[in-house]
Length: 127
Image (cartoon, rainbow, N blue to C red):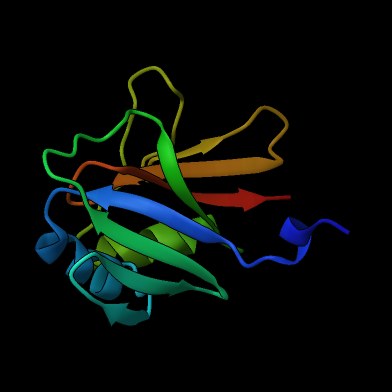
């Protein structure tokens, strides 16, 4: 077995303004904040780790950088909407009124939203 097969995952998300991003990840998304220092805020991702790191002049990329698999995407979108977060609607993409896109065949559903820096995040439901 490979050393990496038993390693714990660490995800990195960059921010230009960690002071604004930390409350979003902690209070809106509900991620437990484990620690914070001069370099990063560290969150628990259900056993994995998310490091939210400052990068001067950070500009987000248009693709999804972090996704969350949920058992009920509709309920998750509504819970985030109750906290003031709205999912992105992409013209011509065929999403429903909540911003949920259903893949052909219906086996996957995805809804996208941005963090305060514009990093693209997603909710995903499979099967």
